Length: 141
Image 1 (spheres, rainbow, N blue to C red):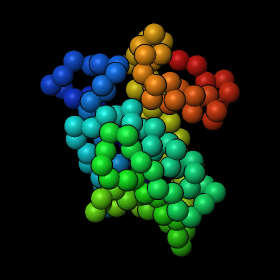
Image 2 (cartoon, rainbow, N blue to C red):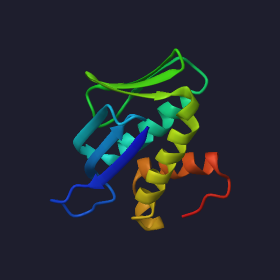
Image 3 (cartoon, rainbow, N blue to C red):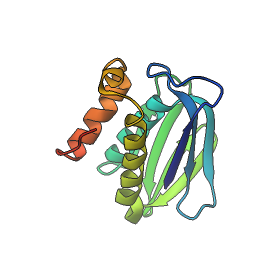
Image 4 (cartoon, rainbow, N blue to C red):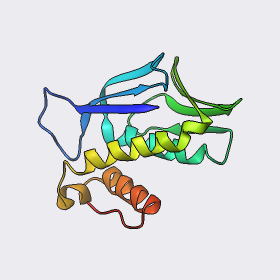
């Protein structure tokens, strides 16, 4: 899976309401989930939680604070499906760690757009930072 995000070009970047879009693309580029006008921090946090949890179970369902629909991960037949509404993106279980690493890179890019003081004002950014610290004890901004 690949992850690309961008800030909402029409609004000033705000560390509390981080608006933008995200595109989640399957390994073979055959499908994607493109979401616009979303809270990037909420989505990146849900994605990193889901990908980490699917390592040890077959089904994960997460609530995204700013969304009405749930984000689901399903593992079956060496495939992981990420589902949101009627949209689905799949990746091979063999590519799970690579997908997590790609997502971590995107989270790091987001976090580095803000100062430590700005991050501390946003609970979700703090949670994202803590997730990266759990994955890599040496992680620093």
